[in-house]
Image 1 (cartoon, rainbow, N blue to C red):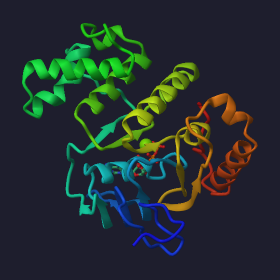
Image 2: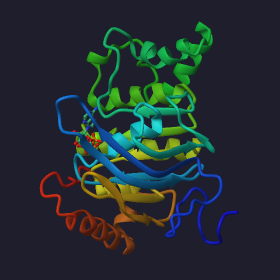
Image 3: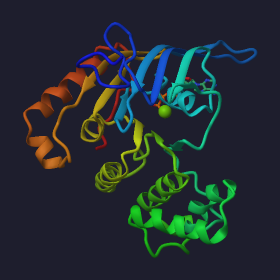
Image 4: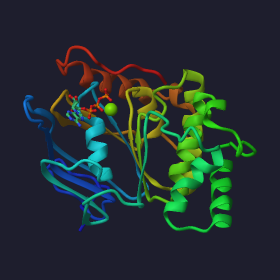
Length: 283
Ligand SMILES: Nc1ncnc2c1ncn2[C@@H]1O[C@H](COP(=O)(O)OP(=O)(O)OP(=O)(O)O)[C@@H](O)[C@H]1O
Ligand SMILES: [Mg+2]
């Protein structure tokens, strides 16, 4: 039974998971080993949960293990210790219900915008007409209607990232794993894409696990924020954002709760003693 006051999918202070988590990670550790090299301890012991429809972000120092954790949830990397459950079942590999958006846009340069978005659908066995219709639907959702025939080299960074998001959404995942998807964009484009992502999230109510270096971005987008320690990462804190939705950047900035939360996260990141590689605030 879920505890009173605890949200579904969260892990309580006592380390107990509540009911109906979409993603539930318990005691997840990761050591990378390679012959002839010292092992790299990337994750110490991560307990984390994401409830259905929740937007959860991870912030932490550079190199602390955020991407590694996301890849473990995605099933691309195997944990050395602990378990990750998705909808109550252990994650054993990648699956169509978990879609990932990488920082590097990773588009096929030889395929058009439409071809890139439709690619995963062909692999799912969908017929051509349906693929095209579906790809167009998601291109419209990310404000790229009419751009079908362009090639990636003809697109700006923001447009490429929109294509990457449309491609992931088109395959119909329930959970979106996003690894600093806006990290390579200028501040203005980034703000536009953040707002678009918010609109899509509010419309589709996908569950999102989002990695970012930007504290502002994490606050603007999230219901909850996990602050990871330096490598090997542990969860330093889990913070409820609690700002009203739908969010508006100016209203958020004017809310007295915003600077308090912002400072708190910075302090958590700062007293980490991790030296270099602190977060930047590109939001
Ligand atoms: N495949 C791998 N083999 C060996 N070491 C790896 C591998 N992948 C990641 N690492 C190491 O694990 C640690 C965590 O890396 P990870 O990419 O998860 O960090 P991160 O928090 O995402 O960093 P950033 O914020 O810079 O993206 C780093 O020391 C990295 O060098
Ligand atoms: Mg990373």
